[in-house]
Length: 93
Image 1: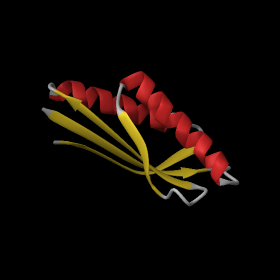
Image 2 (image 1 turned 120 degrees about the vertical axis):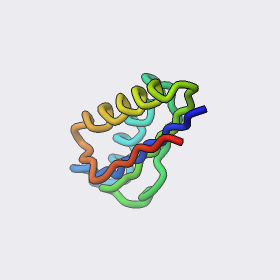
Image 3 (image 1 turned 180 degrees about the vertical axis):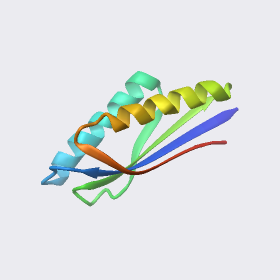
């Protein structure tokens, strides 16, 4: 069993409130869950307007499949125009 974990620290440009932030983060989480069948959650900075940490977990029996899915998740997060990735970490266990 392979567990893939991804963590992205994001800087959210243009957010003027927590409501703006929630809209961006919720959209990212929903797209990740729907497209790649992963578990996704905001895991830090819940009270800051322009920062977020997004976490994703995925379980697979095939290491190459886990790597493929988390690479696709990384590309999706990177494609969000209102979020700049300040750091990322992807691990496999």
